[in-house]
Length: 217
Image (cartoon, rainbow, N blue to C red; front, side, top):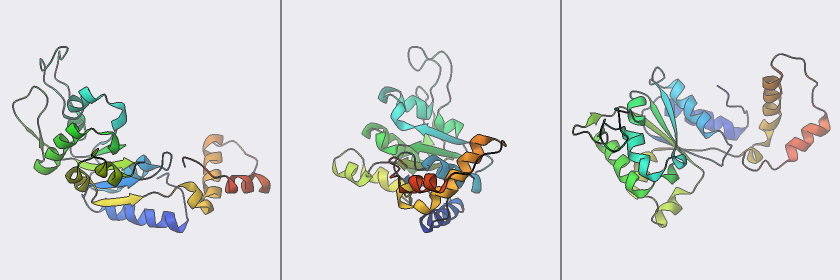
């Protein structure tokens, strides 16, 4: 895939990705914004037995609290004002595949309880339905927060956390794997050049990029 790096830190990440790909256990990817958490989740999915099914990214912080349940579980026609037809939720769309919960720390306590029930029972009920549906979904979550702090502050349920925190992967920021910078520079130059000839970067430019602190990467 597009995960670039030969540093010892990235070699460890590749090993964890391979380990995660051969199991169906839930995974949580920790890392600062811009470290490639979704790329890692996608790589695990593509190397797993679920690769023929969908990889569904969900940006948890972008869903209004009052819509969380209907977005995840779907709803039936007439379930509420404006529900003019049945709508599939993320669990329907990701059936047989992988649901990627980006910024898991943004999920409110009420929704954590409902998701925990699905993880425990392998069933969920669309809003307005009277019959549960079977869930066959693998969860990969990601966060840039310290979730144990969230637990201490009462913002995250410990039982929900431990249902997801089975295979943790810590993504190192670029400033902690500087030897990968030249590889990334070459990759992006070739990507944006799209086949056109390019001038190699000067030694000074490479040195400046190497010394830069790369906040958020």
